[in-house]
Image (tube, rainbow over all chains, first blue to last red; front, side, top):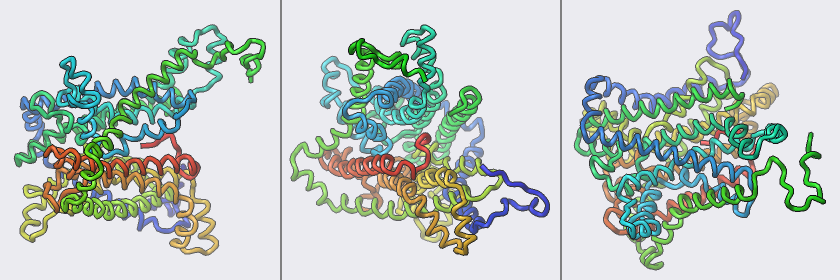
Length: 287
Length: 295
């Protein structure tokens, strides 16, 4: 990273002198396009919610149906991110450290939830877990319903969040230093002790980051959830769906209120990620 | 350094295991767990799309594409991608040029703001455009007075799609062009090439694979976007339904075969995208930005 040396008559320049042309054009276009497409519409949302005020937001959040949807979204997203954390670590470990037939293919398929349109994921998960589907039928024999209940939401969010954990943890697993493992072994640690106390701690920041990314994505997820959730008010209704419902009822203020609360939650998750990474850089020297 | 200490000596036979390897049992259990989990959670949902689409044979599958509404949805999806992807491509080039080739204060804030759409729920992305252009929105009354419709029409769908695919090209190009620095461009310019010629003959060849990578991901999301588009579309058959929205309508009408037939198109797009992406990461890894920060 070059730092501009702003001295003398260059002190008033915005950018350091350079022979490369086009700064004004590209920088100006970047700002205008970013402003028009992203910042101005988001500012409109903030302006709308500032009209509601804190008391207005609180009133919307404490409507029983909204409160139930926010709770459902929050807790199931959290549970899904925990499941992704556990299996994501195993998948990242296996794909990075072991070699077996089909490993590269599986590795490529980890990104499927990024590439598969959410509506397609939604209808296929609903088909799989409905009472007469491949996975739903065995459970239906024991009177357990997965699709069209909260379990369905959990399944969809686990699907959506998995690549975030795997792709965040994978590069760190591949960078684990074999010298540390050897040192640990020569000092008398068993294999399990080495894994738990020498190899897993450096993975903690990446695991936390992956967890927060999966959680933030799950909070906002819509397409893959609504087909399998059943969308029963107070039970299996998610917050993004309630925004759509409010808009269909022309309750723009209500929709804005829920959207603002969701934005606050996902920005808090982002802030957590940045804090974790800052801490990790100090503690481990990498992200 | 100490390989000799841990290298398997022949006379110890097959039972010897280096201290840095997990026991065969643990290894086997972990591989089985990972493969089973991926098969159940990733491969099964993909497989069921094709199974359901062809569950009644080839003819009903093909019949799903005889529907004028389905064809209109395919045309609209192609149109939206044809507008949204180039728009974000041009933006990605402009943003990465200004961010990677120049120093200015507030750069990291700008990079964070470019990534912002990824942390916004698709439904909220649709909602913000309703707040700007909708009937009760900021410009709603003015637009209505002038007979311009953006929400529940194609312009709203294009705008919402641009929003959700906004960072894809830029976030691939910015780190890539930062890694490559500006020495080659400076050399070309001091040798007398014009700025535009420098971009075309020096910069573009350096970033072409990264650019293609970003465009691929941007296009996949643009064609498959559901939440944001659903909010602004109005679901008018034959007019404002993209493929994902048409899939939803058919599915809700219990027209499973037709819904999954259209879903096969999108699943095929996802497979092609994954295939090309994997190929680029394998064949042109050195021409892509550091693999550590994907997505």
